[in-house]
Image (cartoon, rainbow over all chains, first blue to last red):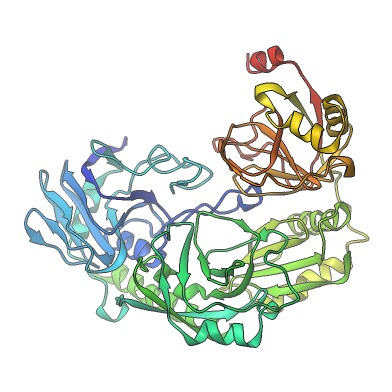
Length: 322
Length: 228
């Protein structure tokens, strides 16, 4: 069946984009992964409305998105608390609702976190570009015509009516993350930690770093004590592939956490945020603070297994419900 | 210089960086391609994607399926067999370029810098076969080498804020092509009408790491007719 109109954009907010899990396999052509910065929230929002967990959502930054519901539809919001309302009634995050045609959905402004994810029962119908619906903002392709959504855009979905019965589902309280003003991130040292001094490595772990306002989906720029590199190494290295979460330190000694719109880099990297903590990177906002804790590789693998186990139990509980 | 034994570096709990040498050179880069091709032909369980660069190969893996210890062991085994594995030759791509004037605003400056004629710059640039060291910076941008020593030029002191799509440029011992309009600090010698990147095609880039490239000069009129 052809996709049908579900939502009309009345106001887009500062940055709202279509993102799914990301674009993989094209890094060797210089194509960045893009995708939802907080993949946990993306997956949960989709599961709550009965979508495939990796379906595209709207990634809403900080405030201001306003939508008109064009037909009865199931929706769920996960991630940051942007004070989402349906007409004048506040809605809970981490649960799904069946909304009536004509309702107005609005995101009043951020109370905690940075990015919220709106899943629509039946998904968002945009073309797959290089196997993904994610918006590549720097190169202007994928997602909704390769750009953030604007006033007047209409979103289409596949068979939204089939998802209406998903209204009312909730994520168990134990799985809901909380976002404070200081984010605590676990890291594994490497790949070039040996090119920093012992003092430099200790500095990274000893102080909270402030999140600078020029952070975006390419990277989180941090400000704080200078991370000292070995005196015998230069400012830059021979460019190499990078992944989201890796922490590069340019010549000025101020760390940058690489995010999703970049795939190669020429600065040395002292440490890398563990996969289980990557979703938190999407909830860090300018003005906030970040602190780092070193863990072992085995502890990192274990942390990821625990996160995935929690989600698996949620999925199973859903599917066995009468 | 090529390392006798590759250096394996941990980049978090889902990627492993393999360094094959310590410099930018066609030799080290060929070995990166070799390993990248071998891994393509002999898939290792849990490997999701590999990103080849000048002197390293980044392995991105699924940490729920494998781990660095297992991967390093498997990939080192594969490297030991490199002598007996047949690696296909890279493809050669010929790229037309209009040199100078509006299309190559730095051509004259580069000639002046080296104290040679504009024609010599074009001859040196077209007379070399380049190896694509890696694709990066923007989608489809090929970093290529090795530019003849006589054309080695430091980057511009002030980068340009916009460089037109298709611009062919040089810096140090490398040459590259800007696939989309972007900022950049290399010296622009000319422009190609060929499309370097198209996300609606698979593969999305004209060139891939390891390819061989030769440039040939065309006239402005040919540039305009290229797409007809």
